[in-house]
Image 1 (cartoon, one colour):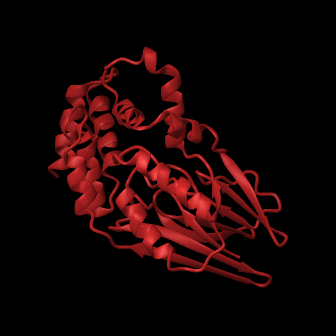
Image 2: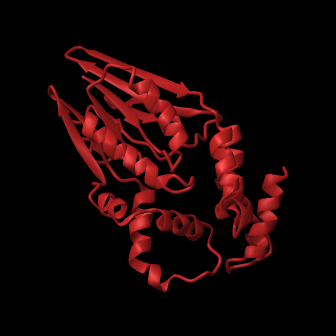
Length: 265
């Protein structure tokens, strides 16, 4: 049994297509989708369509990530949302406006986690790594951190396939992993796929996410170009400045200072 493991696409349809072009040439039995298919890049609708297309072609196990949950939470409270400064809200709002009603209904059907049983072996899938619910579990598959690795702990193999859309382990390109199992055989392969990152970068530069508000897209470009988590670096710088000057409330002015510090570093 061979499983393709995909995670953290974040609306980057170009990276996803590059991976799927490679996957289409491979022999496999099922695809495990580990969440965070949407937000950040502006092709979340197209990514959902592609996942739905491939789930019809191949056996698929699909769970929700935290970004899917953010969208559903936003839908519930969007009428009470305002335009006050929020680094997270802006990204979610832009994505929500790009999704269709059918996209949202599909997202709502996704489970938070699932178990796959194969030949007396249990695979537990969740978006974030957890050491819970691993009783009698042989494999723990997860995403979220955008870092590709695998390790064994207490007779459980943990597998993170990395990020398709935007890696944070200094890898420029897209990542996915493959788990192959037989009665007495285990093989894990880690793939890194090169594609033209200039295409999503140029698309991102034409959006409001890059040019307006908190300019989150500028940090995403830096991350895509380097494989370094610039959004988190900027958030830490923002909080550092607030703490240094004893500022408790959210501040666009302080955010702009932090953004300039990081972008121009």
